Amino acid sequence: MRLSFRAAVSILFLINGMMIGSWAPKLPALMERLSISEGTAGLVVLCLGAGSMCIMPVFGAMVARRGSARAVRVAASVAAPTLLLISVAPDVWTVGAAVFFFGGLLGGMDVAMNANAVAVERARKRAIMSSCHGFWSLGAFAGAASGGSMIQHLGELAHGMAVFAVFALGLLIALPRLLQDAPAADQPRTSLRLPVSPVPYLLGLMALTAMVPEGAILDWAAVYLQREMGTSLSVAGWGFAGCAATMAVMRFLGDRLRQQLGAVLTLRISAGVAMTGLGLAGLSGTPVLAIAGFALAGIGIANMVPIAFSAAGNLPGLASGMGLSVVTMMGYSGILLAPGMIGWLAEHISLGRIYLGLALLLTVPLALSRLARSADFDAG
Image (tube, rainbow, N blue to C red; front, top):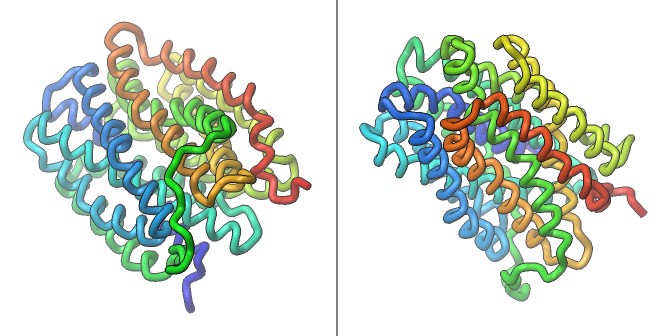
């Protein structure tokens, strides 16, 4: 049976999430192997964000000029061995370089696969973005939940090889079956100038503030559980895994919820739930309550970013993909750059207090929620 365009792009979200989720238990393992502090680990995480900020614009331009299918093919193929390189890097400098390309190439893949999902939405005239991000969260859950145990019992190298094999298999299945959206040869070249309207930038701010807590859970939940609560590495991996699991469930429900409640109300409810979960994680005194808080935060965070991306991809008056490129870049600066700053803060205050502060940050998407109206396909 021929794989549908929706299924093909969903596989890309799944394996991209698996790769990112596999990074979550990798950080405490690197800290132990290289004997580095939270501050130095924060600089390593900063390399992840720096790589994305440097490399993602290249693939944003490629999407605009060559189409998302070509861009995702290049980014994903080169990204495939990067986690394996991190696993064998012998010192903090080579780890930093490998993490730079890991973040940059997976970020470039993310820009391109989100653009391909928007193209499939337009072709089907139906929202699919939340469920695509659901597959991302499912992959992230699998990567985070299995990664800690694999690293602890089999070692970093075996873990890196296993993730590479699964990622490569997913690419072999999905890449030949993507929706081809390259501009026609006689079509005028798309202008790569930034939009003049402030709306894409405000949507980008919404995505950024929604993704900062997600990045903080991805990179630091395992450290929080292991170093501040004394859990084992296997248990610590469940901090982000719990968040990713609930995110996956809610994202598969997200398209229907958005249809029934509207994008604006869905976003407001989601922000409130996420604030409650982050508060619980920050105030909890036991690992079980902290993991429960991260899981509750995942329920809230789940549909905030897909709504922002869908709203950006369907803004009236903008060339196809330009609004999405702005929002994607700004959003991922939150998930990739902010956790590096958290590493510095963690040397001065507890991670629990940091998670409480991140709950307050979500007042920003609450205040901007009316801008999500363009994510409603039936609006008007």
